[in-house]
Amino acid sequence: MCAEMEYVVVPKDPLGDFIRVYLAWAKDEEIRRRRAGSGGAVTAFLIYLLEEGEVDAVLVARKAEGLKGVVQLARSKEDVLKAAGDKWNVVPYTKELGEALRSADFGKVAIVGLPCQAQFLAQMRLMPLMESDFSEKIRVVISLFCFGTFATDAFISFLEREHGLKPERVASILLRGENIVVMSIDGRRITIPIKEALRYIQHGCLVCPDYTGIFADLSAGISESHLGKTVLMVRNEETLKLLKDAETKGYLNLEPAPPEVFEELEMKAEAKKNRAIRYLSMIA
Ligand code: SF4
Image 1 (spheres, rainbow, N blue to C red):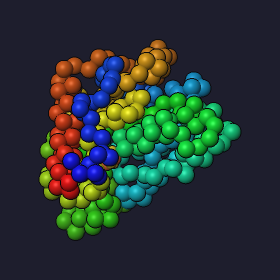
Image 2 (tube, rainbow, N blue to C red):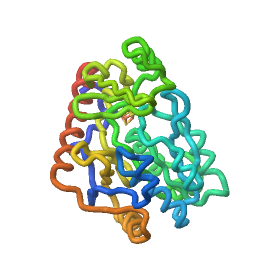
Image 3 (tube, protein in one colour):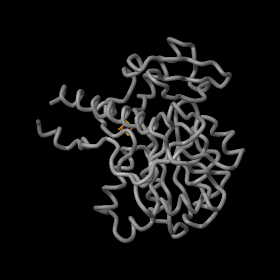
Image 4 (spheres, rainbow, N blue to C red):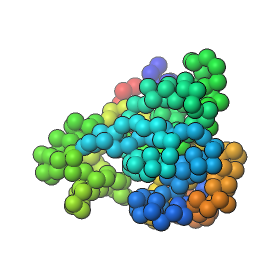
């Protein structure tokens, strides 16, 4: 193994440690309607955290124009509802994170990000670079499942060139089986085989071994066998307590995930880990 490879942590168990896996969905119909693909459990949980005073703000990525995203400090249900449901771009949030953590207005924050961001936050929690109570301010870190994000400019020109789709017409980008499915705002569906889309994925993502966000408190995403519900992997007791409280207070429904959900998670996490090992071996 070369020196560079020693810095990439390839987990033995690609799903990491967890104590429960649920299928979950928002009780609020409006949230379910807005998050039709996922059931809206993360949105409902964030709203619970804010409304019940468990956090003062949540840091979420919101779709701006085209494929670009911006980070928003959400302090109300309306702010959370405006945030994007699907992530296809890494949004750097260091500035907003610093602002939230320094501000006296915020005692506690919840953060929604990608596995690489959850890892960065875990390292900051363990070895704080900022003095004082940085780690105490981060109440919950939620990681969204991630197979990779696109090199934005290259992917935009591919969509325009090959499919005549301008970035401002993109409504969502989803991973479905062996394909990436791009939906336009007028309902057009473009199916791109993963092998073809791989050319436009950020190079760093090709050596990233973490699909679910093993360093987060809660990992969330969808299962293709249960579309319309959110898969929630709970990684510690404190987060489990919060989720149960959210269920009791009528924000979301939880049911134990059936075996096929585990099988799908294991298969995707293993595939991502193996992809990382394959690409790492090319640069070793
Ligand atoms: S594949 Fe890994 S590095 Fe790329 S955006 Fe997802 S979590 Fe981050």
